[in-house]
Image (cartoon, rainbow over all chains, first blue to last red; front, top):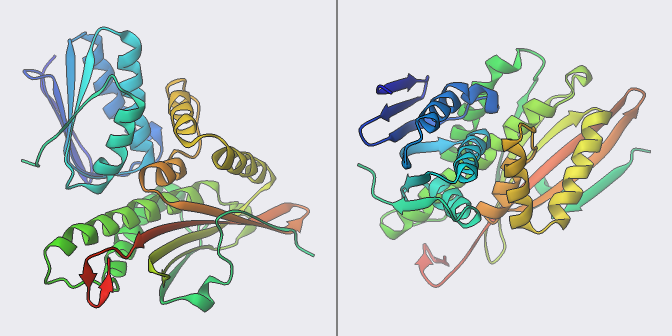
Length: 120
Length: 209
């Protein structure tokens, strides 16, 4: 799978196949889960290649609405159900939604690895 | 006489107790929801930026920057979610405006109250009543997980925004439902979210945070 970019009005999602990392930056407040289709398609395509680990680097994602949280959760649960790969979430405690919601999602979904790092 | 029910932690007569407040109004039927959607985020950004100017912080102290950022981003998230819900579930046929408000109160700490009022039809009224019953009675972590799992199954799984406010931001939630018309049925639904920041040991501008 090649590298890929999804450019939104206020966000940029890029995929690096070398590290199997999806990097999300900006503000994502799309209207409902359907409007996250391109991101869901990208995540499904990556899962289809069955890597042992997929990293979501969210440190540069300043704001995310609850529809986006559902998309992330859905992905984590789908990976959990496959039982052959794991998810690494890279978050920043400098971003409130990440400190608040990622901590709870990690608690609710122990199979995801959560790494706190400073934003690059 | 209109039937009025309140649930959870709801403050009536909010305006009479205010310290500072800002109220915004929207006529949702004036432009399509797809075009209005961006406005939710813009309004939330504005409300959050506006609110922090009233916070009783000494901005020369760097340790206050962190809590200021946290309050600003929390208010931004919650305001956006409340507006998104109001736009989604508003009864467009009723022609009632959506009203959004943010108030700050002081009561041994700082309380930020965000509320949104929109009209709902009979179907959404029943769904909202069911959701309120669930969020007030089911164990919070179980309810969060249950709704997230429903998302995977393609279910619309309502209320993740409100559940995350409660679980992730330790917000208090309350509702007021007022039936204003029977045929056709129209009710005004007000959702209220309270964020509390207790005054702690550090003194900030004469107050303790």
